[in-house]
Length: 267
Image 1 (cartoon, rainbow, N blue to C red):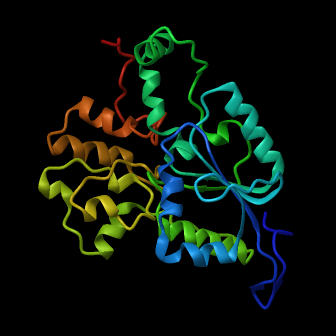
Image 2 (image 1 turned 120 degrees about the vertical axis):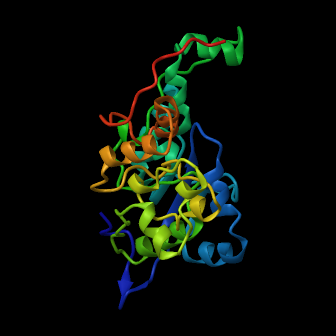
Image 3 (image 1 turned 180 degrees about the vertical axis):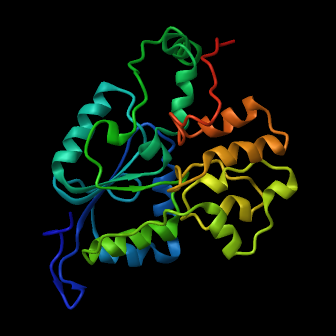
């Protein structure tokens, strides 16, 4: 995957990788995580050549070593633009929950699409279709999950790509990170938490701040979903509460254990 991206001598890169950062349907929060990292931004920009990143640069180029893509795909224009970016990039990284999972936009699919468009836009003509994650359309080389992404994890990934190393993301659950940091379990605070079945890598930021995990990083490997549901029920959470939490980021779509929310009328 990384062959030909950089020239290395004793592990030291001799050529800066050309990078583009692109946004589709989303809040741009993941891009802001990168741009707002003032204490390390200059160091990061010194290690890469940014040739397309609307939030920090007016430069544009049509070929990239690495393309970071944020947001889900909801229109035909976005579909065509994503195909073009994929053709221009040696490595494509889906960045954030919307790009990796579909994200909160998938909640719209609980409603009739025409009704949802009318509710939001009124009679204004809008071109909007089904919500698709990036890998539904093009080959994704790496996924950097989260809502928003973790700044340290982004920089860790960039360092690996610069050096031509394949990154190894944690596959264990957020619960492991909580125990490593001696966090109080939020279940003891009567809060719902999907940490036992959600992939780690965020340093358990939500439980660390006394909030339950929402599953924005997707499922951990070998997660015991059946036990997770039993734990939630034992703590008094209803089927609807469990379904709403599990479906918020579309992280557990198709999981047989989580209860499902039916399509609802608007209004």
